[in-house]
Amino acid sequence: MPGDVRFGLVGYGLFGAHHARVIESTPGAQLVAIAAKSDRSRLVARQTHAQATIFEDYAALVQSDEVDVVDIVAPNALHYEMARAALLEGKHVLLEKPMALEVRHCDELIALADARQRVLAVNHELRLSSLWGGAKALIDKGAIGEPLYALIELARFPYRRGSEGWRYDMAQVGNWILEEPIHFFDLARWYMSSRGEPTSLYARANGRRVAQPALQDNFSAMVNFPGEAYAVVSQTLAAFGHHVTAKIAGAEGLIWAWWSAADARSDKPQFGLRWGLGETVQELHFDKPTGELLELADQIAAMVRAVRDGAALPCTGHDGRWSTRLCLAAQQSVETGSSVALAAAEGFDAS
Ligand SMILES: NC(=O)c1ccc[n+]([C@@H]2O[C@H](COP(=O)([O-])OP(=O)(O)OC[C@H]3O[C@@H](n4cnc5c(N)ncnc54)[C@H](OP(=O)(O)O)[C@@H]3O)[C@@H](O)[C@H]2O)c1
Image 1 (cartoon, rainbow, N blue to C red):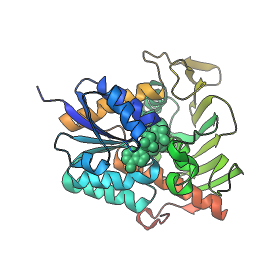
Image 2: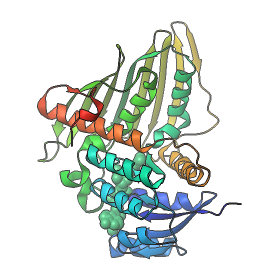
Image 3: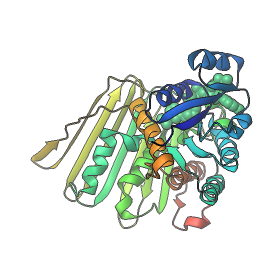
């Protein structure tokens, strides 16, 4: 029997505390260390996870011989430096989205992980959902023919500020597209994967809440894929609850999936999926519920399998780079009013 995979968690805020709880309840995973910034966070971490070593400084955690995987759940601007430090110490890395705030930093992390043969995973957990994954399985088995069009849309309450208000600080968050639309860019690219990689993008945003040009409530982007295929990703933060809809169409029909609750972390959502064309409509029956925290548990289990058995990841560094890249291109498009070409993959510069 291989030993448990030992996780060191960096960041013990709202989502980090969920990571900690989930790691502890995942077979084959052990939570051995937590790095938290404030005295208060360290105190709560110590009281809640008595078996874990609590560090003041993430640099000491990534150097610990007790740690196999560094799980990074800190403000966005810290992802790159923390992941880089962990990979340089020879650790595997599970990185919350966005992978980094610059494409060249994503490239550097991918190169480091490759050179050291370490696992580098990015948490786009919707890929693990019975609902959003159910839509992907239907596309892959040809239920709607080749996908030509996707609309993925969210209406939700305004973002939480986060520890010390980092989510409303451009230097810390990057931009708001990197916070939540990034998940939908990832889904759109995943659903359209048979068409090839995105070729160009046009985006608009409005509804500034603060004196920060990039932090806007309403956001929409149209992403073009090879041939005629395109996807629309759209979000408003001037809303209530958390309501996501996806409509994916091909010549042979439409998939319509929805998820709705008071909060993304709710365990009592309403959700469903129907697909069909004209008079013929079918409904997907789920043997598993879906929600951010359930998918987080599946993500940690997938990380254990990847580290221990070399199993394939649901979302790789390459995927995390693409979702980051699409968000940065969207920001560029919002600012310039022009569409951004993505075709020259390596020539793209949105850093
Ligand atoms: N995949 C998803 O669906 C999902 C959902 C939510 C969040 N996220 C991502 O998860 C990350 C954290 O979000 P959150 O909502 O948990 O934010 P949060 O509640 O503000 O927590 C951030 C935590 O990071 C800690 N921190 C800051 N600097 C640190 C450092 N140098 N060393 C160690 N810890 C440090 C903060 O410490 P103090 O408390 O001591 O200040 C805080 O506890 C973000 O990147 C966010 O985008 C992803």
